[in-house]
Length: 219
Image (tube, rainbow, N blue to C red; front, side, top):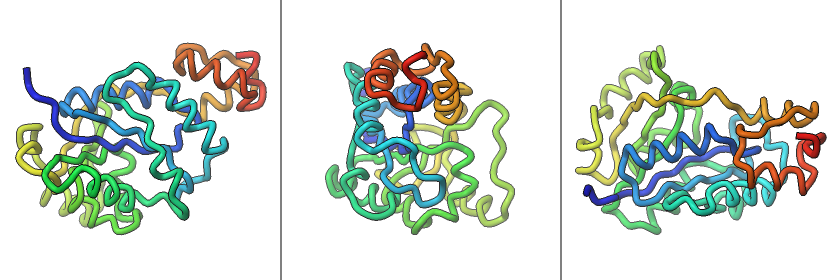
């Protein structure tokens, strides 16, 4: 059996966490043979609308969702930090925890790859971690010359190329990403529709018990 090695970081608002988030995190952890995948809910998002739900609720839902799943961890690192939730600060903190030799993987979607130049200190991210991009079948690379050049400089073809280094590489992985979004789930709950099987049962119970997302009690 191949020894598990490396730590993954998978961020988001998780408002609420759903099966798409969890399946992607689990598949990435398995494919990259990680020892741990940290799901990190953000506090203040630098590039998108702020979360609808209070941080303590989003964290509690995430903790309920990953309870009992070995290697998936709800990490409140960004919720405890003041100011915008910059990925570069998160990677610096985790790199300091795990040391310089263990592989660290920043896991993002193909849509995020296209906007990477808008991220704070984006070119330093790959100095601290590998960047792993999850794309749906038929994905296409960003069209800008800047990004295509950056991708070509860092891209590797497989896991074996990542394991030789602690950081510095880019891997594009094709996954069967589930077409589920937190926005759709919030809208369904607000209109009294059921979201069962779109979120784990413990998350749905938490939503109902805490009266989140308006008409969640009827879901």
